[in-house]
Image 1: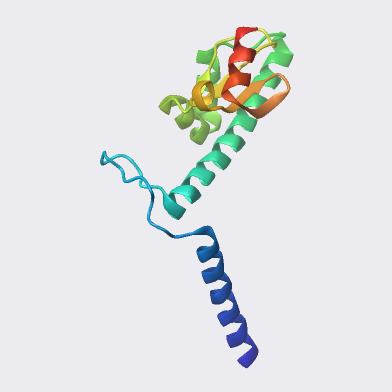
Image 2: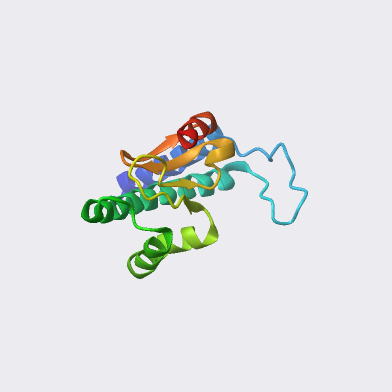
Length: 146
């Protein structure tokens, strides 16, 4: 019983130490619009969670597009992709519908197939025939110009 209590206190102390190490200070920039987030630890966690979801969904989208292109020798058009995704993967369908993931409409296998909406300005996830990967904004511009 004493051992379990000590472990519980140790967990709380570790949690407090991690929180203090990360920093729980007030955000440096205050939001000016009601829809803006103030930042801080909660915003960082939310951003990381969204990045993980995007990464997983980009992988799923690549697998679908790659399999479909193996059959026909070229990528399906964007409407076919959206229809198939809506049936198979509602979360990915929502990302496409919300514009967080953009289909380029390219039909050949060479080139950028899809990208995260912020990739052109800030860098982010793209899909090409090698799979999903993160690129900088400069890399994105170079890949799209090809």
